[in-house]
Length: 230
Image (cartoon, rainbow, N blue to C red; front, side, top):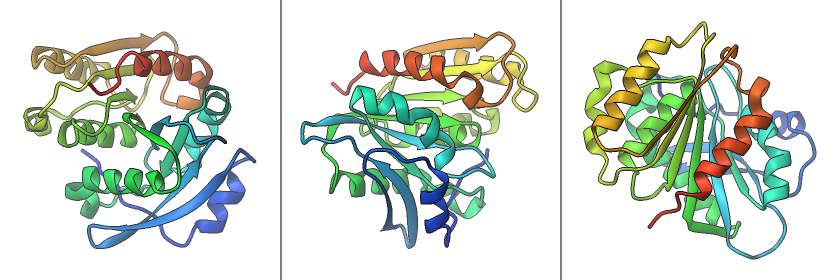
């Protein structure tokens, strides 16, 4: 399994690559002996809002998932939190804790509803989303994963969850990088362990989230709306 850390020195580039949106800011938070950078988009108003932690794929950047979610978030009053990730293995053991640090830092300046903090993970970010789901199951309300599976070698993480966190899984049936067999195994293993699972194989779809973002954002949000923290 791949995990992630953060690129440094890309602050200005991140802001210029993302298109204009309401209250998009770049923030840095210290955590677990390092400094981690993320983009934060906060809709106007002080009413408590749901938040989505967006975890991009290997070799990508924070704006990769932020951009496909911006229009939806602005019309549905959702806070977006997009950390800048890398595939450095040194990030592996601390990823779930760092994600919590990032969200807690965002809560200092954004009116986030603590019962409605969700994760969307794509590709490498999906692997990380599974980690966060298992090690922070009482903190995050629900998770959606696109184009990723749990490697059987890391099956033991399933037993780390103290709550059966709801998970939505999406995979293209033409994905050249992520075998369907592994995603189906992940689905079945999680179901066997008692996790509420929603699963969809997208006909004709490959590995790229942005190609199905309009439909997928709506489906993911419908799933999230039904699964706030108790």
